[in-house]
Length: 337
Ligand SMILES: [Zn+2]
Ligand SMILES: [Zn+2]
Image (cartoon, rainbow, N blue to C red; front, top):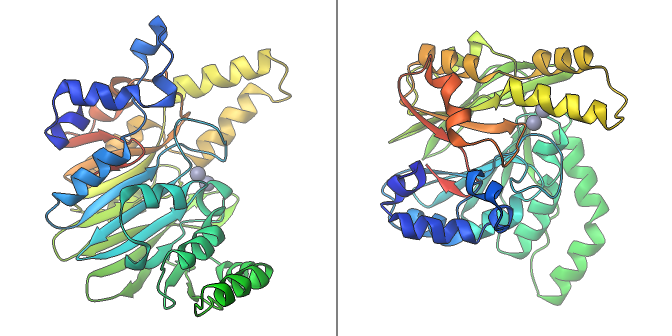
């Protein structure tokens, strides 16, 4: 039984049926049998949310980097607690993936951006406009590093005519502005009747600031590393959390990937590329160390680098499991935690 089936209490047959629907696994080749499952079906996610008691996290997109057309979408998450939804990051695919969870757009209260990289922010604006058409509350709030205010104003200005046509046609109040709070430092971010949110500044050069977030709901605490090198501050922020979602780089596969790319003529230098990756991201061993130091209950390996379908869950898990003795989940798109 996989994590997926255990979590949902599904039979192996159900899970295999779900996998058969995954495009990445549809090829009936011997290689396909070894391929890791990359996502849950919307039906699985909706069933898990329907039976949920308490706060839930849905991993909407779990692949690192702004690369379209992969089995794993770019980074985004939604947490749902007491009927309210909170989105963290808006990589491409966030709007569709959100809709697939069955969580109504009217439930979305706040959007949080960890940093201004396209795999984390490119669909922020479209989520606002399409979400508005689908019932997003006009008092939606957004949080993230500068220049989020300017980006929000510019996007809404660019789409003003589009929004106005729709508002006129369907007699809706137009989305004209979003209440944005820019976050540049560690500390308290916001609080409502469900959740207290705090931030940590992480290291992801040259992006400044890059943030991680911690959400303390009444029944559960969920922390996100964002994109970062291995960082003590993340362990401190995540101290005692129920769940830590940490970015994860499997170094041997990154090395193979870049060697192959160079062999195909890509104009990069191996050492320079690997130095860049190590200056910006966290190898899976270190993810395990940080989670162990933080003493979290569950570690979710996500923002998977490289997000190749050929890397199995065991390969992702093993380096982290050398150091972390709690529960490890290898993230899949639409997985409910
Ligand atoms: Zn990223
Ligand atoms: Zn990044």
